[in-house]
Length: 249
Image (cartoon, rainbow, N blue to C red; front, side):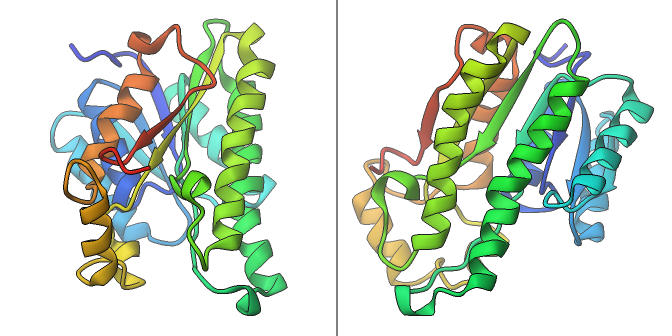
């Protein structure tokens, strides 16, 4: 029996990459998992199949986290399928790097609508569904909020906001037995980081040289840390921000 047996989790942006790895890990530990996705239905269904073929419970639900009506539907489907909610992982996010002269209103709002407003809307609806026993919210931030690389002003600003929101909600929701923590990955090999050219070139080599453990991250490095925060093993932790970066600072 896993440490999350009997629990129900929603993982946003879970059709691929870190989100899919988190969903699989939570299911391995016994949780029933709602795999949220915005557009990649195939990836979400593949993740569901991976979980159910191993004896786990999972469903996929499409919802744009930046839209309140979509989020209300996401949690209505969660309640309909599993009757409760115990864990929320705010993983959905977008990123695009660019220098100051490349900043546009469109990119600003695209980033903040998903990475910040979306996190708030999802957390708001999840808090309504958590029972008297409380629950655990795990935000997926980024180490960019502390090392602030050039050419990432908008994205870094959204992740700094996630750090701040984690602290605020940890205090605000504590009387309701809801814990709020953040896991902040460093450079991690995913479909997204491959697409933008961060993997396999000079950036990866530089980051590996600067990382005490000597490599970049994999989604499977992040997922167990999230499972820890989701479980009762971390019952005395809230408002914490953990850099999951192999020691990179």
